Each structure stands twice: as C-alpha cells, then as structure tokens.
Length: 142
Image (tube, rainbow, N blue to C red):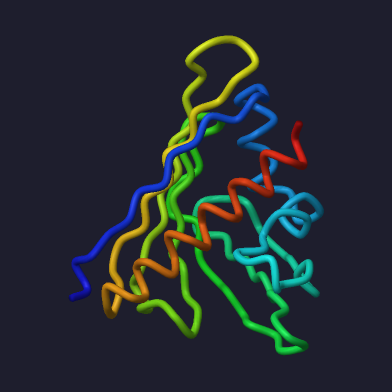
C-alpha cells in the first residue's frame, strides 16, 4: 500500500514569491500548519531552509504534541519545494513535493503531492489535512 499518493491543488490570490516564502518562514508556517479545526497553532516551528536542512513542526491536538519532521530535498526558489515528511501517521520515507506556478500576475497555483502511505485511510486523512493547511495559508496571505 505504500505506493499510494495524493495530490492537492489550489489557486491562491497572492504572488508566487509570497506563497513560496511562506512555506520557509517558521513564523508564517506556525500560522497555517493546522490540518484540522480542532488543532491550535503549532507550539514550535523550526527550520533550516537549505537542501539537506531539517524542519520540525510540533502540532497541537487536544493538548497533545504531534511532532512532524523532515529534510529538504529540493528548494528551487519560487518554483518547487520537496521534503521528507515524518509523523506518527506517515511512513519514514514519505516525500512531499510542492510546485508553484503563476498563471497570471498576483496569483499562484499550488500543486502539492505526497507519496507513500500505509493505507487508503491514511492517504485520505492526509488529503484532508493538506487541503485544510492550504486553505489556512490562503486566509493568511489574503
């Protein structure tokens, strides 16, 4: 089942540079990295946004910390981010890739893909989570 993958797409009414930079800013990540309405803002967000650099996001759900960590595999400014994604609900070698395109000035199309899940249910949960995260990002940048 670990060959399962997901894709989430969305158009955000903000310039590509601003949308891309939000994914690398610990302060802004802390504002939108909430995959469900029951979660509060992460208690800790750190990152080293260089190829091979690592990040940590401690999400909070019902008073419980849920660590999410990863390593940046690719940082192509304003075009692509790729990183490993490790949490209690993902496989250790799961990878997230986000492509950023600007269909017209002042808007950004995001295509987020994640590969490798233990089950269809986990893939569905992550699809809902990434969709909520991108919706939060849109609200913050609007």
